[in-house]
Amino acid sequence: MRRTSARFTITAAAATALAATLALTGATGAGAAPDQQDVVAAAGPIGFGAGTTGGAGGATVTVTNASQFIAAVQRTDAVIVRVNGTISLSSMTKVASNKTVVGVGTAGRITGSGLNISEVSNVIIQNLTFTGSNDDAINVQYSSKVWIDHNDISGAYDGGVDIKRASTNITVSWNRCHDQDKNMLLGHSDSNSSEDTGKLKVTYDHNWFDGTNQRNPRVRFGNPVHVLNNYFGNVGSYGVAATENAGVLVEGNYFENTDDTYHLGEGSSDPGSLAAKNNHFVNSPAGQTGGSVAAIPYSYTADTASGVKSIVTAGAGVGKI
Image (tube, rainbow, N blue to C red; front, side, top):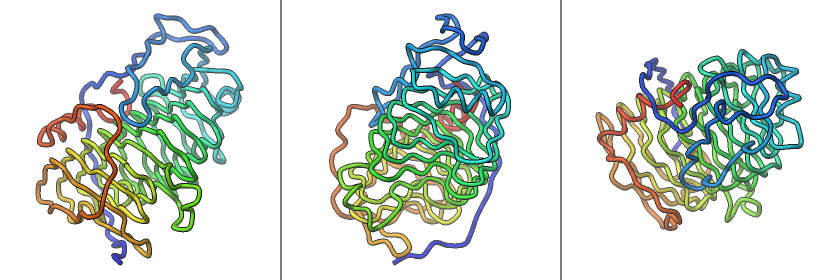
């Protein structure tokens, strides 16, 4: 089996334009009712997370500190939580079902620790800067209908976005990930097939893997998993790994300066299946494919791979919605 390299390449690049999915303007006080001019409905995610609505239809609350934030994201009703400022967390903070947690402009920041989406459904995490977590930036487990979109993720002690333990029907889109070693894990253990088989169905689309070292993503059991129209730039150890009966379609991505774009197996994990389609390579080789990947069960339109770098660097990250 292939062992993970110790190389870790970090790049810093600025994104510059607009990719509209949600518009938030004005300000709504804590506990106030939503205003149609303040919250404009998102177009919604594509892929497995389609239909995720978060806190739509509930109250809109603006928070500026950790105590307000924790109280808002743990309410039992549907809530749109607008984060205006830096929220410093000391431990992983659970987000309840039917929540949209969204940064205001470029001001929303989560630092110190991360968000735990556990045993819930219908959650949107959007337009937030995550930095310096003492654990994961975002952990998802035993949850469904989750949309992680247009965030900036860096410097987490463990994973950037880890999805595990029978979670499913999730879209991870338009995020910029940088200064991160273990980036996106899907399926935490080789021995968890009883929970994970038939689950872990995730769409990763239009993310900017900006010098992230490994796990972009690393997949167990999920079949199919769709890695669509992402930009891999200066990735250190490897891009995508399919292991332990996973089936991954790597489609329409732009790989640049990435020595190991995708492969089967990783570390002590057995090979899964991987199919590659219509990718674009710049100073990067085509990777390893094999096995059988289930058909993607939803309709979508893929961007032409050669244009993905410009599309993603213009639209991924915070302040681009």
